Structures are given as C-alpha cells and as structure tokens.
Image (spheres, rainbow, N blue to C red):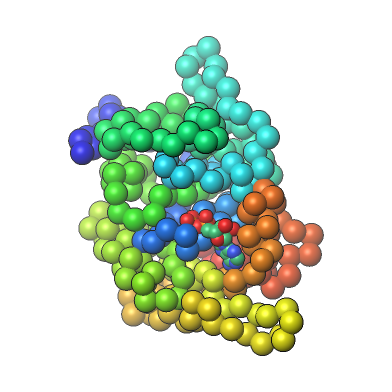
Length: 259
Ligand code: ADP
C-alpha cells in the first residue's frame, strides 16, 4: 500500500496534544478496545483532558462502549467538532458509516481517511489522545506510526501462548519504528467463580506478566475476566467509572496510574 504522508513537510501534527498513546494488540478479541476505553475514561476521571480516537476502521466499537449519543458535526471551515461523552472527545469510523455497513476500503483509502480524521478534528488542547488501534500489524498501524507523534504504545494481551505469539509481532513492529512501548496489560487474567469462589485460569494467568519481564518492559497490570467488564462495554458504561468499581474497576484504575 502507498503509505506516503499527506501532511505537508515540517507541519507539526497534533501540536496541542501532550501525549498520544496507542493501545494495540496482536490478536483480536483480547480486550484492546475495552482497555482503550477504560484507560481513556480513567484518565478523564483523574481530571486530564482526554480524546479517544477509534482507529479500528473495520470494526469500530468505541461509540457503543461509551454509549456515544451525539454525532460529530462539520464546521464552515471544513473541520469536525467531535462529540463528547464522560468528558472525553470522541472520534470513530462508526460515526461516518451506517451501523451495519462493513467498511471494505483498501490501504491507501484508509490512510487518507485516518490522516483526515486526526487532522481535521478539532481536538483542542488535550493531555492525552488515546488511540484504539485495530488488531495486528497492518496498514492502519503503519499509517499511524508514520504520521502521528506517538508518545508510546500499550500492548494488550491475554495470558495464553496464541495471543502472546501475536503480541510479540506487535512488539517487533513498534521496535522497528522506534516507538516507545509503555508496557503490557494482561487481560482476562483469571476468573473468580461467583458460585464456588475459586479462581479459574481460563486463558491461563501470568503470561502477559512474563512477556513483559522477558522483554524488559513495564507490566501495567492484570485485569480479571469478569462479566461486569462485558456488560459495561455493551451498555456503554466503562467499568472504571462505576460508583463501586469493585476488583475489576480497581484493576483498570491501577493500569491508568501505571500508564
Ligand atoms: P478487542 O478490541 O481486542 O477486539 P474487545 O475490547 O472488543 O477486544 O473485547 C472483546 C469482548 O470481550 C468484548 O465483548 C468485551 O466486552 C469483552 N471483554 C474484554 N475484556 C473483558 C474482561 N476482562 N472480562 C470480561 N469480558 C471482557
């Protein structure tokens, strides 16, 4: 794919954003979007000015996960005002296509759209812009690595070998582009059975922590498998914002502090 930058040479990208943090995973379904949403909401809760950019063009889930009830609107200057939820400014492909419409664009179109979405949106002054990347190491990741001033990446993985293999590929991709990796989050790390009270290691446990240690990276925390995380995502109320966050909400808060 042609991934040349559309940006004019020397122009500073996102000059008013202090930190751009990409949340990445090698494999899909490991909870990358969930971590991105809870991280952004957690930072906002701590008083930071936060933007959340859903760069998962082909499977944009962020609007549902925060129950975004407003659409972006265009200004006379051809810029876009992003809607806000829970104090965060939001942008997602899901705002631009119908709910059931699959996006079937090729790499160069994705590249153009992504640069536009980032550039033309009035993010204003932000402390953090959190990017929810698509899984894997494809065109979108390449575009973002080449055009945005990333502060660093957070890699989300589940503890099992299959996910760790893919996380390792993601890690190498960031290394090749000299992008700082802020650390590893281990999601779905053990399940406490509400009936028997025992902990079951459905995807194993500790694999993400070991992966961090093996690569000399910070371990940002483990998030247990917990139905409240899933209902929070489906209902648009990130679990980190619950009045009584419980063990899993506290785990997300710890990740937020560690980032
Ligand atoms: P990805 O972005 O990696 O594809 P998602 O964040 O969309 O993954 O998560 C996949 C599904 O798993 C979602 O339905 C989400 O609500 C659920 N999920 C993620 N993390 C957890 C967890 N710790 N406990 C329970 N369900 C989770």
